[in-house]
Image (cartoon, rainbow, N blue to C red; front, top):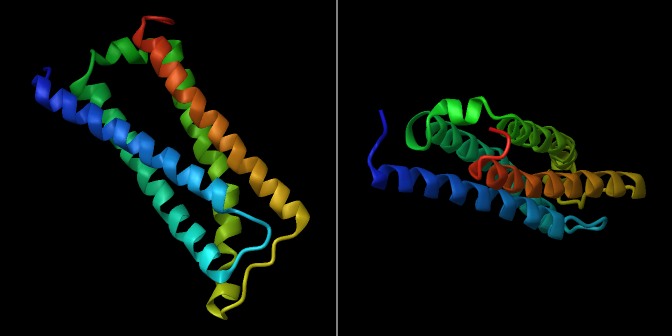
Length: 154
């Protein structure tokens, strides 16, 4: 059974707000992450990274709510290969975020002592590559959504 138009609009709004929040957090991490960080900058990155999975859960939860209750029939999505590409991209973003999260968490002992994190050249390049990969993959998700909404793949 389809919900009313206002509920559909609110579900879409929460989904889009979550996507913007996710993109904003990722962009902030990318901008703030440097090889030389003050303890305050490192803590700010850690706090942002703690919000990242919450934003991802908001996107996932609101997306599932839209899928089952507030958008087109579930079969419109579930039978569309572009939908599964979109879901694969979402999972790829989540997996790519694991390495930076572990890296940021490893700073905690030094930060508790008031020291800045030590980041080698190799670590810095590796984490930057992961952050950029997340950004690129995240940018492909709306493309899949637009294609799917226009009936491509269905």
